[in-house]
Length: 338
Image (tube, rainbow, N blue to C red; front, side, top):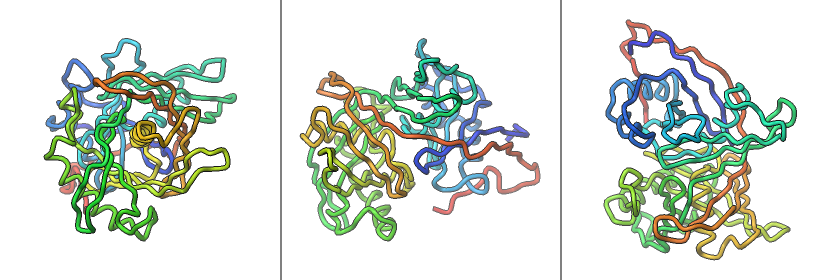
């Protein structure tokens, strides 16, 4: 790496880390979606991702984003999301973190009304972090997703633990969704190793098949993650309550309820009657983080009925770093052990 020092600001949203990097190499492409494609094979951009995500500066479940110029003229900035295996098309917890960061740093001045819209250009489209403030405190962030929709209902997927029937939905990325009970498991820490291996089996079976194809944009194709959930029954107001863990990329575990995954979950529940008008999904992650989600509007997208999900959570700054690379360090850019 030629950069002698790399500054980052780190947040967590629902327990999931997000490392923000503003000083990044020039990445070619007319749009943020094009920049993502370029970054995948650009040794400078991908090398910086590995340096900041892999050990010893990161870990196998690290997450972050490069702030880049937007192509959406109404966006405040663009972002390329990354994880240990590459660059993703969407990231809801990252959007919550970026909205918080933008207001806290003054990049986007806080609106006197107490609600500030931070518009972000991501590879799958425009998202908005609607940041609520009280004085100088950020009290909540609503992540307004891209249009989300059901792609396939009840897809039978063979696994080492028997056949499972998965729902496939899009919420900025494509997710397979299946109850953990289908495998005799639960969304808990003891079941996590088995759920990680099942996620690899499910993705491995679905990805070569049409179920993983995006209907309009092949750059968005591929099963990004598998959402395992427990249905906890309705709350006192009749709202659905589910506990979930999203396993994305190659076995990476989301500690948060997963923003884009929650958007995909909202789309699937709405399409199958599980999230009726005026209802709110209570989504609890394996770490215990609690977010809520609702349908803000119904629309048409990709030739089908779709919804505009709004996911509400919070993010908190955990630190600032100035990473360096010793020229004698033969373990640059780093390594991952799983």
